[in-house]
Amino acid sequence: MIKLIQNELIKIFKRRSSYILFIILVVAIIAFNYIELNKENTKIKIDTSNLIESEIEEVLDNKEIGTESYVSQKNTIDFAKLYNRYKENSWQRYALNEERKTYSVYDFPTDFYRDVQSTINTINDYEYNYETEINEQEYSRAKEKYEEYIKVLDEGDWKQFVSLKIKNLTEIKKQFDTTSDESKSIDIEIGLYKYRLQYNIEFKNDILNEYIENLRESQYLLEYHNSNPTYYKEEIQREIKDVSLYKYVIENKIELDISSDSNLILGNTLNARTLFLRTFENFNILVIIVVIYISSNIIIEERNKGTIKNLFIKPHKRVEILISKILACIITVIITMVFIVLIQYIVGGILFGFNSYSVSYIGYNFNNNQVFTMNLFQYLLLDGLAKLPMYIFVIIFCIFIGTINSNITMTIILILITFIIFNTVIAEWSKYEGLTFIAKYFITNNWNFSKYLFGASSNLSGQTPLFSLIVYLVYTLILLSLTINRFIRKDVYNE
Image (cartoon, rainbow, N blue to C red; front, side):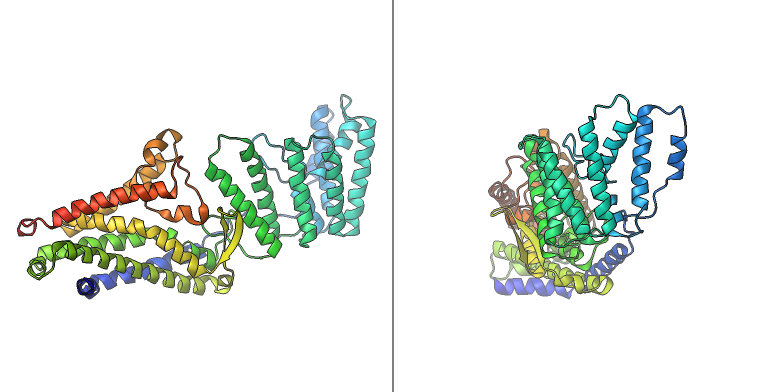
């Protein structure tokens, strides 16, 4: 058997087309990385330039403006004046700029972080709205809070500002029941401000502040999803994972985008590390092309040349010959995967810089609910092994088609189109809850085990690693049996 496998590998790597294919792989990887390098950063940059005052003041001079509109415009101009009071790119502007953002998480309350804005609104509503429900005590407390905020902002100590925020939010929390959504929202904000103090994260435009902003939004989503039973377990898992990763990065002050299989910072430019970790995701179609080309040729070429008959007259069973061909293809695919990984590592490092490789893979283990780190190559080894069953199935399918059809070009095109259609169409069907009971039995939803890495679950109801393994084995054994049956037929290669 070993000798048969060696002979098959020699045949594969003797072909000039095999080396042309590998050259195409290199060119494709370089082109992909170059495109990523030149992609425009779509992340919105924080603008701390002066806010416009004059245009709003013109609206306030309009005597016909209604009370509500007047109060709203007055709130805007008062906040703008406070904002413009401080220098551009100062921590004060970044801190106040935080209050200009809005988070919309369905009906979950998310605006308690806008406490300075809230005090301005309360003051103006009391002073200019004759139908206000604000009482004198609330008005006096709002003015007192506003003066406290101005004082700490003027003194220039961002830690005092954060401490004041925590104090005021703690006071506001007393108004709500501890199990209410409002109380949970305030706890999120207090926790974030405590993070700033504990890990000395000043308000500014850097990646740690981006992580804090993303942590805030993910915590809101997690609270909402936990209270809403209609959401898939996978969605809740994703939020738990993201929250844990954000906290880990902040606590360890990692000033790098550590995105791996999904983006942690939306719109951020990618680095060499992220692209490296996504090697098999980005170049899966390249591996598939190699799989289809090699495994289709391994039968059809010998059939067309007539050399397959020379194998049959040797003292080897046809089953052994077939298995040796399958194993040779698997080994070639593994070599291809290793080759792609090494090329991506080198090309990514040259174009993006090798510095990001110093940060290990940072993942989340759903089995023990803990963040862990792993060597980048070790992670790709696990990811590659988890995807290998998919390539093995395609290999067997290609060999099966090769025993039926002798036109190599038509076979390759047919199989590639079939793969793309099934992989995309079934993936779209799987998004609909009503089709889950059917979609979970398709081979394309069960041959990629990377989705189960580190205890993650499938988004298809009732699908588990064991379920996928059983479905995969059933499909593979049936296809293998059909291929063997076709291969051992005596008259097939005399056609």
